Image 1 (cartoon, rainbow, N blue to C red):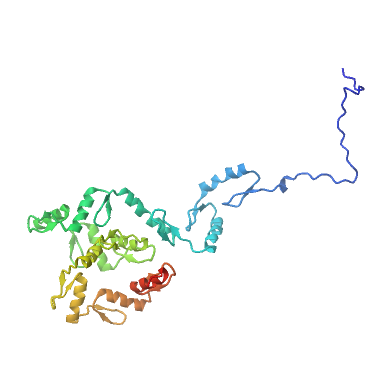
Image 2: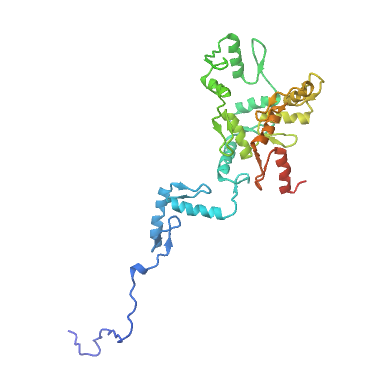
Amino acid sequence: MVDRGSDTDYTPSPTVVVKVGEPKPPTKNKNTVKKLHQCPDCGKTFERLSRLKRHEPSHLRKSKHPCPDCNQSFGNLSVLKKHRATHKSTEKLTHQCQQCGKTFEKLSRLRRHQPVHQRRKRMDHPCPKCGKTFKKLSGLVLHERGHTGEKPFPCSQCGKSFADNRHRKVHEQAHQGKLERPHRCADCGICFPKPSELRRHQRAHTGEKPHRCPDCGKAYSRSETLKRHLLIHTGERPHLCTDCGKSFIELQQLKSHQRIHTGEKPFHCPVCGKGFSQRGNMKAHHRTHTGEKLHHCADCGASLSTSSSLKEHQLIHTGERPFQCLVCGKRFLHIWRLRKHQKTHTGQT
């Protein structure tokens, strides 16, 4: 038993001395603790970083409000609105394609452009003449006949030749009366083998144009025409001239252009014999002899010799300026005026 009276074995407990009038040390209040860790998506704050990290995945599950200007999504609409204000406060954004370096003013246009590179990766057979690529070798072979003019499939009835054997078979069925055309147009009487072809034809009578461009609102009666038009916005020109490097949206445009290099002028005026590289130019020239003006403006009654001249004339009435400079936003009535203006930005004369 320990003797408490012993000086060597007994250690007294510490005594707390509180001076009278001295303020007590402050006690911690849970409500006054600073919450230093803030969620960037909703603004909610947390005392511990681990709780913030546990909270953050909830936004991934609830991200129903995507920002149209960038790739971020938000679970709260009010947070999205605050986020979008950061885009408006900065300078105009340019969205660059990582594959080719091409830039776009709108993210939607960049996204529509990007599949061009994905298609090119999937297509392994390039055309040595224009650079266009194909998934299958058979598609390339058929395409190359467009360059060479080769038509190895002649009709056994009339001798007409075709580049595609399928077209030759359909043509021969017409000779034999086997090609059924049960779908008749009630307006003009023309018959079609498929109901889809009849519906597409009827748009010429109704004026219906269901295929609308999401960028400029221009509408077309055929989906393939809209696809060609969209290439204007994406900047894709798949048909390349091997002589001068100029590229075109359509193959027919390339063929017409190549006559400049070859000097070929297959279309001759029946009055004076003057040759032209394009049929449309020959017809327009021929009207200078006849004085014929087939195209009339419905607004003012003016008569013009070509449909393109009429379209340009009608822009005067509508006030439309369809050609816009992507650098400064200025709009023009004619494409050649836009091209001339663009040289002021590049420093060309």
